[in-house]
Image (cartoon, rainbow, N blue to C red; front, side, top):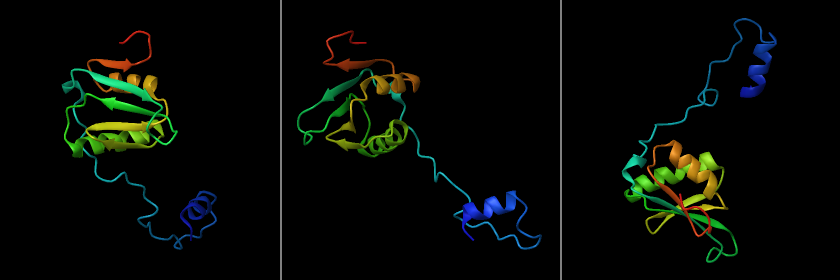
Length: 127
């Protein structure tokens, strides 16, 4: 039986007693092992820069100033993909995200403990 259909049938009492199917791995949702998050307070300054060139006509936001190894940057990029709902990857020691996400990223990094987050090239307040 399909997991969703089985849940609906059990909720409505349509599965007779003793006919319950054992819970499978598909029925239980697990996040997998929790990866350690790098301590963002170690970065003295995180720079967010919006870019229009060099990405095949697509817009991107570059995150610079993160003092982490490549593995930690990949874990952080994975978390940012989930949180921002956008593509993210590591390139030359920086994280790139698809789209103009500078304001959302600034709020996110500050909420996670970053000391100083600067939005570069906006002509306004630099943080």
